[in-house]
Image 1 (cartoon, one colour):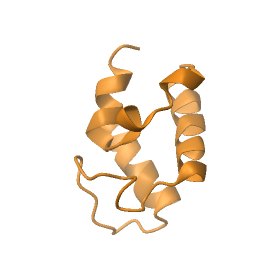
Image 2 (tube, rainbow, N blue to C red):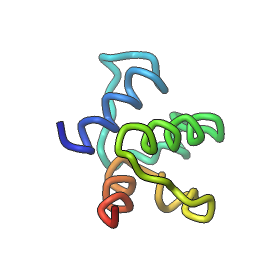
Image 3 (cartoon, rainbow, N blue to C red):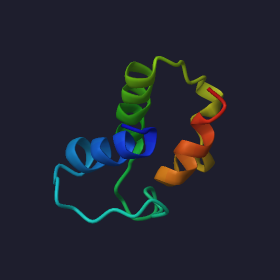
Length: 78
């Protein structure tokens, strides 16, 4: 499975708690209320565990977690 699919599935199933939820790859996850500060921490922990990378604290910023596509773009450097 590619990273985008893994992230979409995690957000739908674990963050939104609804497998059938509608989620766009470009949807603003923070402004729409899908992600809050706790959700971002859960997402960071999931990414680190699933992809075997360490996300530095200074990289946990709005631009990197605004949407699924933003996360995939950020993760391309790993």
